[in-house]
Length: 163
Image (cartoon, helix red, strand yellow):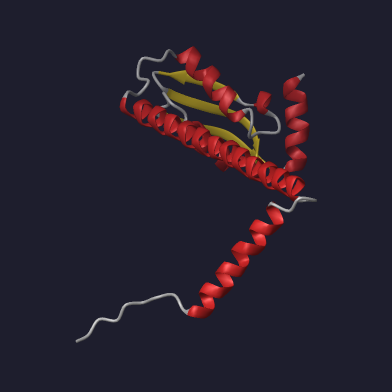
């Protein structure tokens, strides 16, 4: 079997030569060549700097994600078993403060890592509250003594409870 060598076709060579000649003539034109070269230089510098900027953002993002994963893995390896109950209560309050409309209406207590939740809570928020508390570091269990209420009842009960 005979091997054929592949050469660029004659037509392709003509077009490539013509294009190279046009670019060269355009860039080295005595009247406007200096301005065109400056434009090419400025655009090239702009693209290069944009690449560095966005490349740096990507690298920072990867670095921050890696730090987060390392922290999450190291936290899961060494669990917070020695946490005192008052700190755990404050951690729970901080955790569900972002979920509930009336976080002050919930009584929180803890004993040896087991958290007890009591008080009125909206029906739509109860499941998220329990899941949030279970996810917190240092929580070994959750006792649910919540009063599930509708939205009309909740506003009345929580208002009187907060005062």
